Length: 314
Figure 1 (tube, one colour):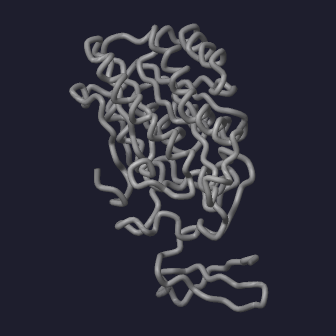
Figure 2: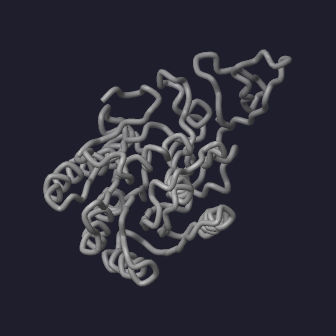
């Protein structure tokens, strides 16, 4: 069914706002969940933030950094948009220099760089595919050439593809998902680790879906579960070197990955089944990454941190 949408006014009394009209002109309102976003889709993974309506809120102007990451250098994959962009901006506010790794989303990457420049921050953009181990070596080498150190690694890049059945997942899709979401972490962590000193922090992005088992994201959930195991084992392996390894398991956040994955009818109530009845905005997760990168979490390693509006209590 082809839906059009419009916002109803109702003198400000309509909490649900968005109504749907089918091809016959009949409309209805979603009364179960609050509607947040208009229906939308993108046909390329991992999606483009500049195409989203509304645009995600990636910065909290009231967030004032206290130089918790002063003079440190962070490598952030998928840093051009979404959670990665919000983390990069929070790190900049804390005095960090950032290396933003992205696939091919030039417009998003340039927007992020320009915003960082407006804050007086320092940013290096590196374009390429983290599925390629040689590119991951290049990331580490270029970071060292530019900044001379790597203190923080945020493995955030990822893709997800909605499929109704395991039988619909091709070998090629499974391979692509695993290589993007998990192999890339293995490759880039290996490449950066030889340059990381005691006190360094590795932060891997898993997903809440690993803990409740999203039925239409089987390969994605598999890859994100592997990240949890990798995080726990590596944290133990590196504990005597005082290099901490943790994971973050986000719930539903308003990022380009959502319209690039889900059918458009799911988007208006994205995240509304969580107890907080909404999806998260990316600025709301960024302080957790600051905590995990800073001395504030000096005794925290091997943990999976949940931030999901109450969807899963871990």
